[in-house]
Image (cartoon, rainbow, N blue to C red):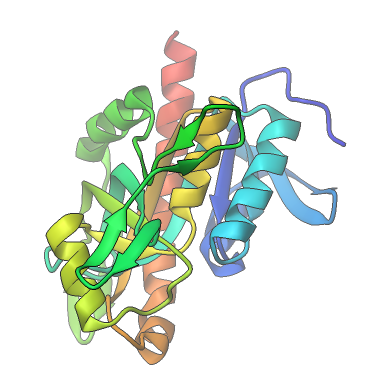
Length: 261
């Protein structure tokens, strides 16, 4: 088991290799390692000491890897970088959403009137865990302040070239890769999310439980739909790169803030 870092370290998590690859390519003093059976790469990213790893897809994989790496590396914060389907029409492919809330959109009871969101029994005596989690206020404030200095790389989607935006919004997650029109309508009415994906709510819950600051960055890929397979394959790489570029930039902002303290 690796020893906890003496200097502050940021843990960066992505669900898939395609989402972490660009980040790892930017590491200085990169050093691969393995924690239990899970590979990772540590190094310096824009001056910030980081550990980067892949969680795998879905809430169970995300929670398992997050808890293990948080326990072993004792990070100062956890960042999530990846993609998600575009639930809100304001989000274009490549636009990065900074989480203001991260929600389990399948937590509770499924009724004739859609989801009834409920707290559930937690691991500690008398504890109830929520279906929604807020990011760390300090990290969110820094991310919001950092947007003005960020120059996003232009992308081309369906013959249109534009500079993707970085905005704040609501991220929802569960093990549902696609959802029906009825589910979309229910989520819109009750949650009004911007991005839908499969890991961040579990990561946010683990971080909250263990007292580690977290913040989620998700770039929009395809629109939210019942069968996103072909659309995701077409747009996922573009979205993954957009989120990764912002994450690399934000690591530099973290490093600059630390050095100023």
